[in-house]
Image 1 (cartoon, rainbow, N blue to C red):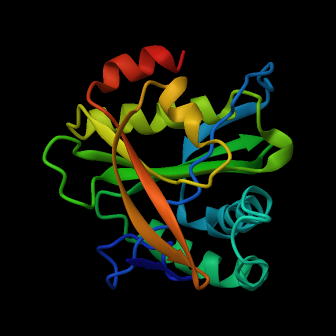
Image 2: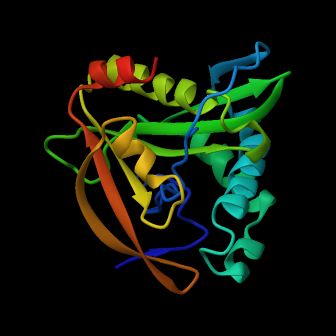
Image 3: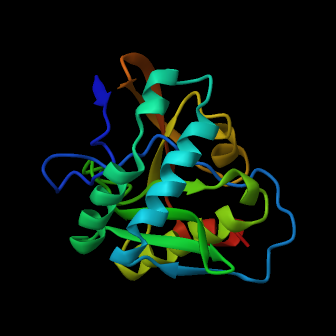
Length: 211
């Protein structure tokens, strides 16, 4: 069983830790996109803002799902330190942020698949959006950025791991056409959960769905 701890935000190639991939969330419906919003690749000075989105999104998405003590223990400072390290030492790992009026309101991360899957070589590792900015099309824009970057890196396929209890989980299968691949147990704050893997064999076809 995979044990989720507060170090799990980092990719596997840094000290054996992994980046948090249990909070994949995207807009279930789309409202008009704020014209002041734009997507760009993250830099190390974004670490504190990314950490804020990461922690706040976990607390809103998983309230009542994961132990309250675990959510309360999430630290902006610790996450910021880890994100700074991650952004300064990417090694094939990348992050994009969504800004509205120069404020980071969401982010997405991706890179090569860490499980060495022979068919799905790219991975969407995590996506988080502050609650007030969901359902505005930002999620689709962030996923599109990851897909294009993976294509640039030579990947034609992608997978994502999603916590089974994630309230938005089925959207990836029903709306984005992800194929259910497999599941695995995971532990978060001492409680047992399950993660589902969804995959896309054709990133070009996924981009068409994201339009």
